[in-house]
Image (cartoon, rainbow, N blue to C red; front, side, top):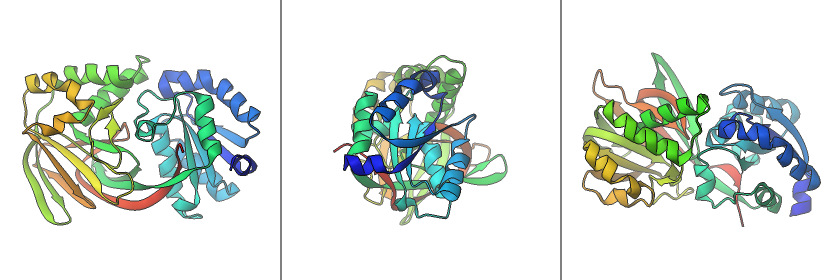
Length: 318
């Protein structure tokens, strides 16, 4: 399989800002490993947030690249996936996607036990083992405009979206990211957040109504640098997993932070879990529910989530 992978032409999408510019520093070493393994590739570099979708669409449509490696974090991976779904020349499953993780969270790679060393990650890509994973699509509003986004890991709402926004602002200022930044912002944000009144429906009808502290919906298990928000998620079962944390106190949140990392927080009485193919989330007037997907801050409610079963072909470890 290795020779087969080497014979392909690869588009390598590098986000030099990933990992607080770690990708920019590490790219020469990554390029050297790719070259030493005789991998034929063309590298392109993102210049701003949400640049990757346009680059990916262009190179798939105009130059027939169907093998792509993202070099960055979960946000870069998300952008590349959105680029794949923005083109119509190939089916999404006809495009093979690998990841070299250089981000601060790397939660998608954690789901598949992606190794940490670049040499080992490139060996995974050379192995050629692929897996068809589900993809989420969320419709949301940004100001008054309707928009949508594809995602491959987890969408967070309410308090989770606030923490992600604060963490992203820290990263933009060069203060790093990852689990420590997420936990620090999780505590700091408690003093400015208000619970949101939500109505949550899936394809069978209403499943929840009431005040919500935080909510996660997704395909894989981890976000926030290793927090197991969806401990029972299966990435190819055609269903979203949903965790809803109802109204709670600041003290309860702080006391249970450690339980976010092993998923045991889901046993708390204020936590509910659901599964389904489609979810609609509306919030009461004047209390918009804010949204992030794969660690990128987006817009706000009303939200509609739909799942695309086995819609992206990813390279995973043997």
